[in-house]
Length: 440
Image (cartoon, rainbow, N blue to C red; front, top):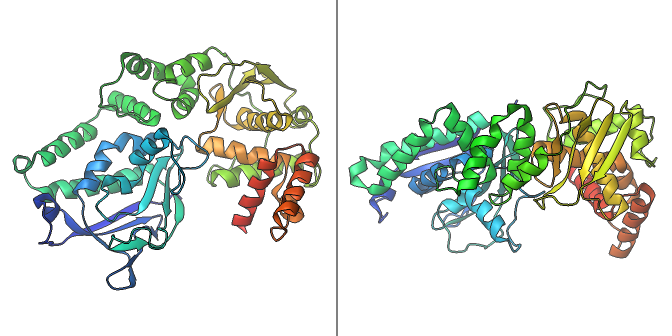
């Protein structure tokens, strides 16, 4: 059962607030994600831990309304969300501004809570503040965690927040900001089915559906989603594309003409699990079905596919993809052949990892046609990466063979030896080690 977002807020008086709108929306506020307290912080005035923020809520409600469609639909476009302390690209910075509630008001004490879609749920990631990172703020947030939330629950929590803030804010004619917020919220609340589809698609692409869109992008969003038989492929394009490249990427993907998956006998995908856990589980089931012990490398992935009842696995080189986040397209030709098409990776281990990811998509994600294999952090793509890693180099072997207490040179030699034996990259080895160490 998916968990909910909860925003508890009780209006309190704050006579020292300069802005009348801040005075009217000042509240004792607590935020919980999946039952965990996001707002747990050290109060510098008392030196004690508390879960309650005393803040004006108008700017937060305003930010939620402004980013509504992106918060509910846009995925993380990288394998990991951007983290503090690293230099962000302009694209990463813009994404953080749309998804981190701390961006709502730099002058208000807010947690570094990031909310984004993964194609099935809303992901909530929050990070603790480094000690003394913000000495001028009245407190610092103490904990980091991650939860998967129910989308409808997130919508409900934000709707309740916005309704309260608008009620507290007074009549529209008292402040133009209130009038603008009320108009924008009414536009969202009153959107009909067709308008919602358009807004969801725009939000998934990371653009505001109510802004002035370039004519070509507007036409793409209005027309490309009309073919519901290719909805999953269209969503892949929205997740991996950009406003500048999405239309061209959709045309590229549509011209591949691969089919949906036939009925094949493979272990069921546990959709209720976290993406990585689901990928690991089915990869282990595949290896067990093939009679492979964890320490046995897979020499040829074509043989793997045949053992799982897929007669042919083929790679067709197609060099130009109009998105740097897309590795390949995958689908079926007839009911006897899986086809991956895209640029041919230069390194053999990269080809093997891409092929293993393609196997996952072909077996589990191509129910309505071709799919894209991408770097995006949504459920299907995360699951395919975990499946490929565990199929090619089981985590059990990595944890048994690598010793974190070794010096860096010895640790690197251990990783390189495993990479050579299992014909994977050292990055895959490190990835398995790090994920296994966290789990333990």
